[in-house]
Image (cartoon, rainbow, N blue to C red; front, side):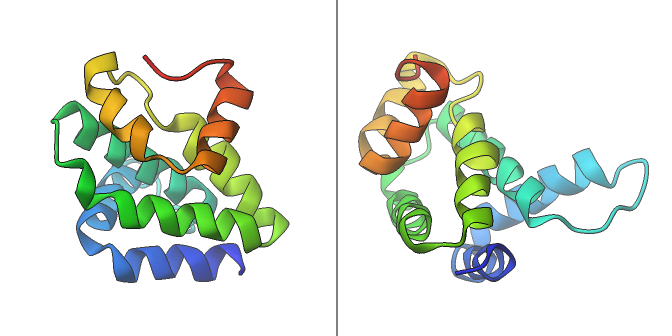
Length: 126
């Protein structure tokens, strides 16, 4: 699967968290200058939206299907998609989220995404 197609699929299938990611994306990228949409950068905004949800202690079961879809896309996606999931999404996941808030999400994070996180950060969040 290609990056832009997967980005649109996530936006279509997970509209609530995607609208939060859209708002973060627009605030960061389009606040001063209108820029061309970047799926790569949008996945960073998606990670940040999930970080906000973790910090607000939202129910984790709401996000299991999304995380599984991202995990599956990493396994069979294009190199560009895999790089985006690794660098833009996983590396930014759990940023500035306290250990008590991140722990439930860490436990539902698919194994392949956990491995990417640990490969970059050297440890689990918290």
